[in-house]
Image (cartoon, rainbow, N blue to C red; front, side, top):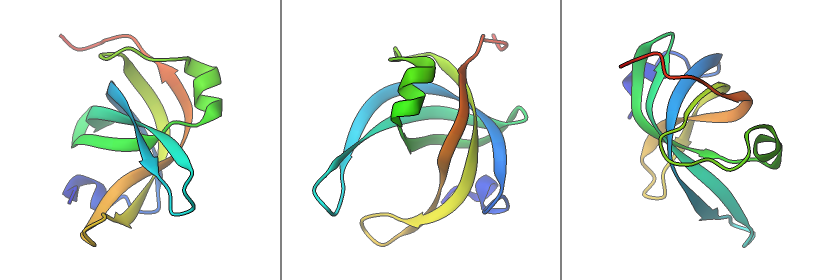
Length: 107
């Protein structure tokens, strides 16, 4: 579990992360949702997770377009618990808004 996010459950925060790749999830109704793997997740410069998978929405596609691996993003997200397929509890980021490409400020 992502302990650094545990204290932020239910809160909307600003995060940064590095885009790694696209993926997909098959939903219970058989539909497919496009996802994105983000790494090195930070909030206010403090490391909170090595990676998260998040939903890529159509609005996000319009705002930032298609991404190449290594692009740094800044976004607002809500911290929320969920259960993995093995019924193990974890914490993720949901309802991403204000997604922007950002410049690298770290070496």
